Amino acid sequence: MKIKSAEFEISAVRPGQWPDDGLPEFAFVGRSNVGKSSLLNRLLGRKSLARVSQKPGKTQQINFFRINEQFRFADLPGYGYAAVSKADRARFAKMMETYLTSREPLVRVFQLVDIRHPPMPMDIEVNEWMRRNGLAVTVVATKLDKVGKSHQAKAVRLIRTEMNKPESIRPVSSEKGQGIDELWSEIETLVAT
Ligand code: GTP
Ligand code: MG
Image (cartoon, rainbow, N blue to C red; front, side, top):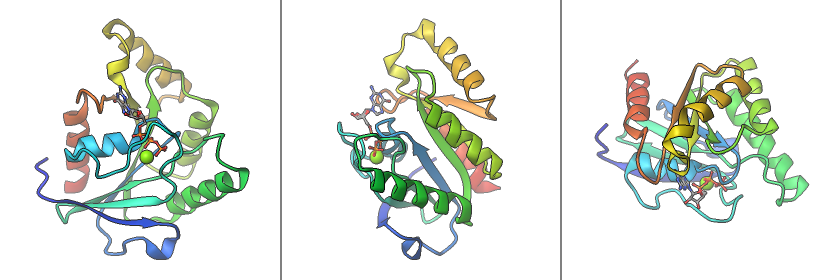
């Protein structure tokens, strides 16, 4: 995909602020620190269009990015981050639930999990919930550069069984770029249909 334009549009705290021109949209969800913002930046070839931080829980709103005037990425707040207050966590969960169940132009959800670890109970729960709600989900296994080649297939297999055989799992590295072209192909196909 040739990126002709990629712009940050809005950091939305409520549905009234969501862009409403109906461009097809792809959402990125996953635990705090799993690499959502990094993946977005890598896909768009920008160093810091989406904010990346060592500290989890940085993205607290839904951040919308418009690409090529053709489609949109939504960077969702990370779930399951223990160090934010209970009230904040409940607020994020509610925001995510509202978004995922009511966002009409949403084409596909990319759910990110860290390839180094078995999926957490929260990852499995969110995955089951999304599938129950009829959402199309691709599981993206991040930080591929952090596992040795000999462990990669095994790590993917573990994610596949733990997450109840998702439609597809894509290993990627935002650091080194592995899997990025393949992910773009999927997005391109979906934008075209
Ligand atoms: P929240 O906004 O807090 O939910 O986090 P996030 O999911 O957006 O994660 P973010 O992209 O901010 O990345 C968290 C940390 O993981 C940063 O220190 C990144 O540099 C690192 N990271 C992300 N992707 C990769 C990757 O593919 N490889 C490696 N080695 N590190 C990565
Ligand atoms: Mg983020």
